[in-house]
Amino acid sequence: MEEVVKMLKKVRKIGFKLSGEKGMSLIEIIIIIVILGIALLPLTRLSVGNVKSGTQYLTATKATCYAEEIMENIIADYKSDDPTVGGYSNVINNWGGVVTNPAPPAGMSGRVSISPETTFNGVRYSVVTVTVTANGIQDVNLTTWLVR
View: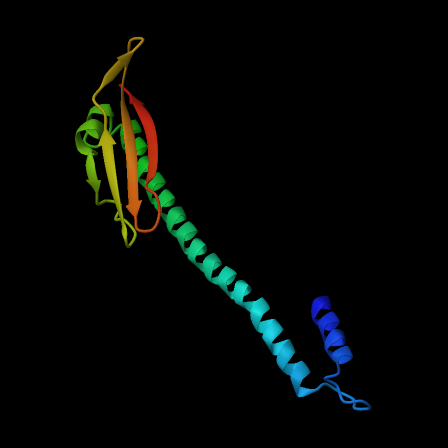
């Protein structure tokens, strides 16, 4: 704003202002409007950019929450004592592929991939990866190991 005031003082010195008159001339008002218009253009672009990035962050947050929900269900089934849904073998045999339960949020899809069983230092395990895909963001991946 200080720059606008300085510019107005310069304009008055040039002689646009009629001597003895109080207030602002039409030329001064037009100059102020032009300067404000030039200054506001970048600010409007910034606010539009903020809205777009805010939408992307919201989508990424929803995708992350959905991936966490899937992973929590897998781990709950893995730790369950119910032999019809629980345990390592049931998870390995029943969780691979596209996830429909829990239902994905609009515009998203979830997929579970389970690696073949591997042995390391006598411990047998499989790597489970949950991938959530949504428009406008990178895929969200969560990975865990399930030990037999």
